[in-house]
Figure (cartoon, protein in one colour):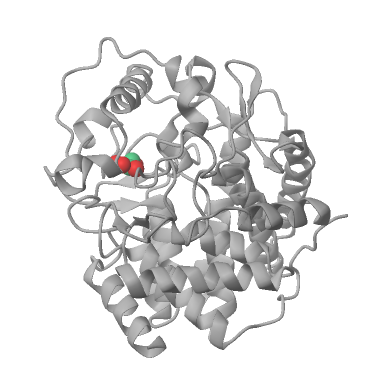
Length: 432
Ligand code: DGY
């Protein structure tokens, strides 16, 4: 069964492979997406190491001069997606979107590097990637943390990767809908509309795109001029983890300055993350910079910080709260006890394997919780195939099908369960 599942996962990734990048799935997402690509590269590393490196390299080839790495690279034309290059209008030679996505490149690259046997062969390529990723990390603090708090804000729900999370509901109310040019959504032609964001949300997503385009995508002004500015603990935790992993890689190639500066950035961010802990909800929560208040909502975003060296007692409380629900399949992207929970709708309830993967990785010292996350993830695949996400109550497949990063996570889970390794040297330990 394990072998058959691994073979199917490899076939799924191969079917979405466009040569130098992978589409998340044909139809619904026909281009290269930033964090999809990095996590899919982990899948490649189980059967084609060179291809894993290329996946990350292709993404970084489209980095903007200021350091930003866009969330979509429109490598080729495709009328089946909205909003396409003419709506973004970023003026790039190969069109890209104008916003970014969770920075997991450093995190994934370290894993790929550690699995690479002929590391000397990749030395120069690694050096180039480390410099580019460092530039991206620095870009975040230069452009998304103007008050030097140590944490960065997202300025569009799509940047979070958790597009329609309940975390953004209040902040989105402050985003206008008027003046949005009429458009036809394409996502709902590829996936069940009940699984996707609402029309109201889409209007506001597009308003933000039009607003940023009207400012010529100048990152130096976008943060302050955006009505939507949220500090997401999950996003920041992925950034911190990537920075820490990049520090490790920089040390490997004697880029001492990058290593040191990265550790300073990460250390400051880890301390600042504590301001987002919510003792009542037993997890971290978002901070709305426009409204100047915390967003007291129990979504998956506040659990992802287990991926970094937060205090042990916080990890334990998060581990307990993860198991504290009646769903057959964890981890629901929204606490099922909240009234806003929707079992099928994208990031308002469904289970995502990439999140299960990152949280399970953060819970290595909580083996029973970790093992049950992995078992339930693999059960979902057996029951429902390589879907984009799943109903946590009965495991029904939702969104797009034959999904690259879902397949990649299966290879990670299968690889780890057969070949569990001790924590590699250089990994930062939790504080207490
Ligand atoms: C989409 O099109 O739904 C994406 O999540 C935006 O990147």
